[in-house]
Image 1: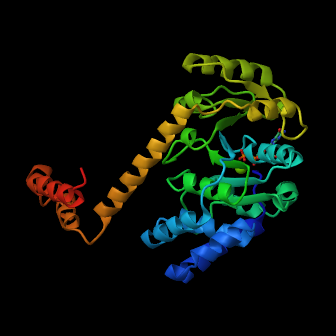
Image 2: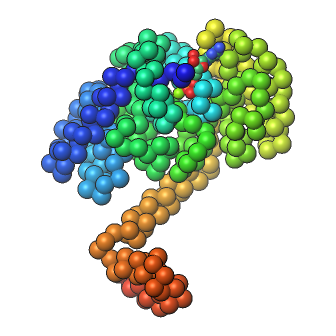
Image 3: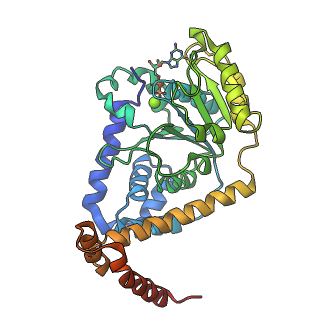
Amino acid sequence: MSVSYPRHIYLKATGEVAQLFSNGPGLDTLSLAKNIKEGRRRALARGLTLVESLQPQHEKLSLQLFQALGPAERALRLGVTGPPGAGKSTLIEQIVKAWLAENHKIAILAIDPTSRKTGGSLLGDKTRMGEVADHPNVFIRPSPTGLQLGGLNQRTPLMCALLERAGFSRVIVETVGVGQSEISARYLVDRLLLVALPGAGDEVQGIKRGLMEEVDLVAVNKADLGQTKATVATLRAALRVFRREVPVVACSALDGTGLAQLMEAINEPSGLSPQERATGELYFFDQYLIQGFRRLLESSHFSLTERRRRVAQGEEDFLAVLPFLADYMERLEKTLGDR
Ligand SMILES: Nc1nc2c(ncn2[C@@H]2O[C@H](COP(=O)(O)OP(=O)(O)O)[C@@H](O)[C@H]2O)c(=O)[nH]1
Ligand SMILES: [Mg+2]
């Protein structure tokens, strides 16, 4: 059974989606910005929905919202990833408690498709995650069920940016480290924490090579169940193959073992270098363009669509449409013409 965020929080997020979409272009971004600045949670929830939306009309409003909000100081962004059931949510609750004690305002983006599937256990687990979920300095945003995006996506960086403008000094992104993430968590967060289970090597746990290259910190959770020593050693060895010394901490989200050591490692000032951060920004830049071009390609307003359809149905092959494509690109470049 997996620990999830309380049911009412899911319902709220889903309701926000319906409301936003019925409101459409009439949304007043200035007052939304004002309400977000004043710490109104409903406004923040709506703002996040707006920013998360992939609809072109929402994209414009989203930009307006950011303009109205102005810049903000960057929060410490912590990515928490790892296989389902490793204890990410439980550990996050402990991390949140530690940060609350330091007077931080903490937002959690929970992008975990598996926790939604355990719908029945949501209420049962409310008491546990509920301890921090209703705290005034904590804001939890699960991926709403209405918008099944199922992983990090090109909107997640914007959602983090919005949370920073809403005054959060800590942003946690919980994501399952396996599956179809569109973007790399590495560029999104300052510190990437991998939560692993004791008693299994990285391959057994489905931890991908790529992830081992990206993590800053590994927690071998459930130390109360024993068997952590061998796992810590195995993971250390696996990490050494890739690069630097990454701290591997044995801990228990349940009995508190190793949590102080884990917090120390999380709070370390290192994280992304300015160069790595710039690479990340460039990555988002490219993702944005790629997404825009993809939309163009799929849009029914363009002559491209008809040619695509014919290729898809075997009526024309690639070589046959190449002259059209070359001409299309040339016209596109002329239209843009800002060299
Ligand atoms: N024994 C033990 N169980 C834990 C620990 N941390 C989490 N769990 C349990 O592991 C299960 C999955 O935890 P959850 O936080 O939902 O995992 P997630 O899917 O990675 O978010 C739950 O039943 C938790 O109570 C721990 O440190 N020790
Ligand atoms: Mg979870």
